[in-house]
Length: 427
Ligand SMILES: *Cc1c(COP(=O)(O)O)cnc(C)c1O
Image (cartoon, rainbow, N blue to C red; front, side, top):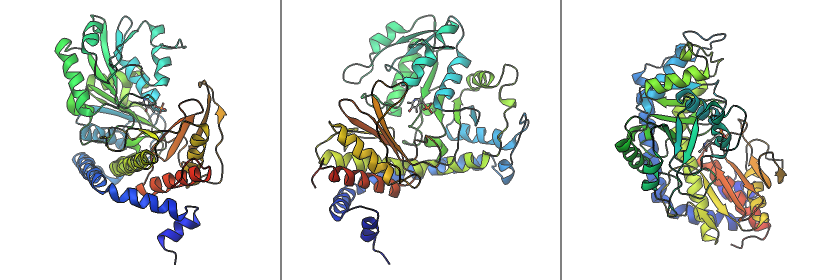
């Protein structure tokens, strides 16, 4: 019978690394308790939504072909709508990823001559081509939808004057990205999103307020739809899929706007009526059920890492003490060796593909080499423990996820071990 320490040692974690982690973890007890409180609330919220909509075993039956009358699909959409307090939702395996969900929500609700406004600066990279900020085949720009952007102020606050000036008769939809993604601005809390929406509504009550909710679901007890958002959009291989959804995306909000998105996803006239679920319903339900606690584990991992690496002198965003509004953690190592060692540690701790060693690689769409670590059950799933970093200054690694806190902890200890082995840190 191994002790826990011996088991860690057999997996490659030295005593000093283990002890360092234990000390940090002890200091985090109150914060972990606060995260558990949020998870408990959100767990009940999801269970209540499932009960209200009478989820039954029949919901797990697979449909094929057109997918007419797919009880499981329709009920799941009602469950999402109940949990997020919206009139309607579209939750589909035909939505390929988060970018696709956002593209469908935008294209379904914008018409030629309309203008799209981002009042929170540059949106996520992949949206640049959706919008046409970078020219791209099939972009909104090609369909005559114009785009305006108002950057955040240098201190991260909203540029209210700039937003007032940017809103005009053409503005039809305002897109607000909750997570910082891979930028350095702070992630927006739900409360701040609410303030921004209230301001926009005071000037233009008729514009659609959409929130890119990727990486934000279940981090707080409220979602943007609780503070006035007309639409929230996200990926099922991030938070709300709970690690079990093998594919998919969701769009939840006002009925009219969700239906517009559905007409774009399938076809005008067909909308939500078609779309077979091919056996994924059970994973979607079960993943949504697990999502609150999975997100809690990922958050604990992010905070654990922030505290470890800040203590060792590295810059971390968010820092060790600030409140969290998404599950992403950035650590700046200042040297390529740090990014590489960190990613090798995350990979070595994975349940899948732990024996492969990630290497920096020239990836399409990036202007430097990138190293990525992921030993995931679902390809590219970033609710599973994963990390990546561009090999360029300031040599920062971004990591997120962990289906369980225990795995996140092990991955971070393994990253620390690799940094120690590379003599990037002394404990
Ligand atoms: C991940 C993400 C997206 C895009 O999702 P994909 O599934 O990678 O296409 C969009 N916005 C934000 C904020 C994200 O984190």
